[in-house]
Length: 275
Ligand SMILES: C[S@@+](CC[C@H](N)C(=O)[O-])C[C@H]1O[C@@H](n2cnc3c(N)ncnc32)[C@H](O)[C@@H]1O
Ligand SMILES: [Zn+2]
Image 1: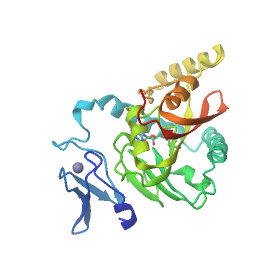
Image 2: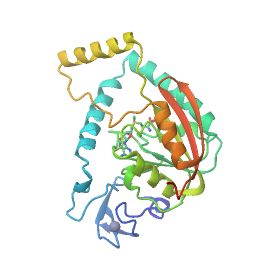
Image 3: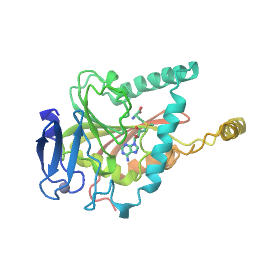
């Protein structure tokens, strides 16, 4: 694995320092404090937090429901990105939106260190110019070539040193994570005090009667086809709820309504002693 990546990693559970270990061709990182071992597979460190019984995640935090939604999301991804004309059109829409997001955030010409939390395949990176881009996600895409510094892990337990990054991106991840509170707190921990959290997020819109009817028909169609596990989201919120969440926690929050179902938010100045 890359030395520059190793230098910024810490244990996701206790934030202790790590040592690098290599036995034959197998690489791993071991926490000096809690002794947990994190394997490195094809140069990508697997920094999923584990508890002292070597479970994948600490049991008392109740991650089961999150795991279920995540595996539903994997199936959704397979169904959606099927190479059809519909998938192509969706990709064009997403690319347009990403372009606008990159303008809104001003990250485009940045030479900064950026962490993309819930980065997926890191598609957004192509819009960010010459920055030092790092990504973290619990899912690794099959046969995807990660040509950037990639880590496997979750936003609620980030395995990075305090204050290392200049900027963070949270793109379409808040409705997939387990705890927004925890994820945002962790995000703030790993960026500098003057850093920005840049959010691009799908928001709930009730939609017209026709939209709702269409969605219902789609569900009926899927159930006839035997497609189960349609529920991929851990939570939903409307624009006001989401903007207020950030306003309560940050000194300065600006937002842009990209569409009735998408909002961009920039948040700086974490309120440390918030009531
Ligand atoms: C809708 S995708 C967005 C991917 C990418 N950010 C984008 O905008 O194209 C949501 C991503 O969040 C990831 N995710 C789910 N739970 C997470 C968590 N607790 N921490 C970090 N990422 C998470 C999923 O694996 C998935 O890749
Ligand atoms: Zn540890």
